[in-house]
Length: 333
Image (cartoon, rainbow, N blue to C red; front, side, top):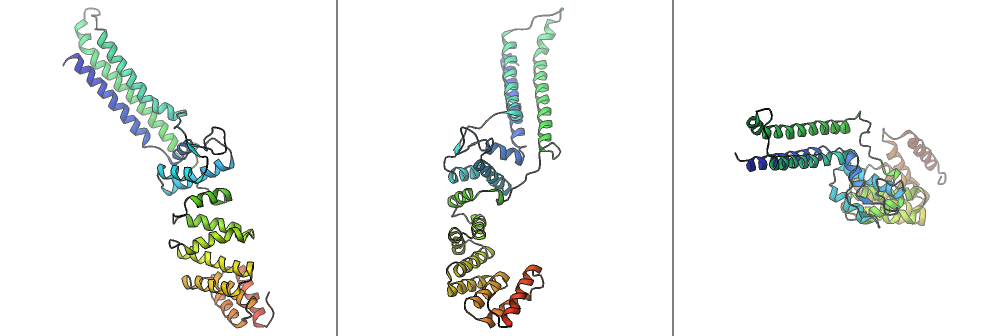
């Protein structure tokens, strides 16, 4: 075998080993690593040249929370990045960073390749000289020795990389398990932006309802109304989501505008979807009693709610008190 062929074989082996190590590192990424990597790719919209992964700004924190949620749900990198760029005005895609242990792991195969090529080129341009009378043996063995050096170096890199990857993936390595934060830590503004950018995606109904509920609990019916209405009219909403939205719309129609008939009609729609809904039955009873003066129908609905043995104790006490008042002829509580 000629020296040129040997050199080509050594170069090919070195390149193959480098590619193998890159694949080894890329396929051992943990969820935490993935969240950090994606966070480092997106520029914070309200920061000076910082990624959302490095910025302490509230919006950056909200965006990282969204990344964690999407990673946990199995979304692809492309889907997550597209959602972030489409939902947050001013967000830009940064060049992927290289730092820390990840940098060392990615550079290791390149260094091995460079060293291997250097050794091959040097040996080709520096023919071996006999030493202590055994020149022919040295010339015959120098190529195998070079191959062993390259293979040994590659094995050492793989061992070190494997150890580092094990440490990173181990729950005892100082990194907590993936913790998907709930929407309580996401601002209304961020949720509004995400909902607006994903209004045609069925899965957004859950976030839309959570946002509407915040407004509802704060008494901001004006802001809650369009979100509940969107869910109620969505053909992709689940029965539970549609029922919740209709109940809230009904109560806002009555409590906010005094529209008794509209409220009762909306409660009826909710009960068509979920006939056993305790909330729809009880609140419809409240409207019938307090708004329409229909005490008998109201008391029938209150009794239906109380028939549920699993009813929350505090709710049971409240319904029992209303039933006692309505059956005794008392006015609306």
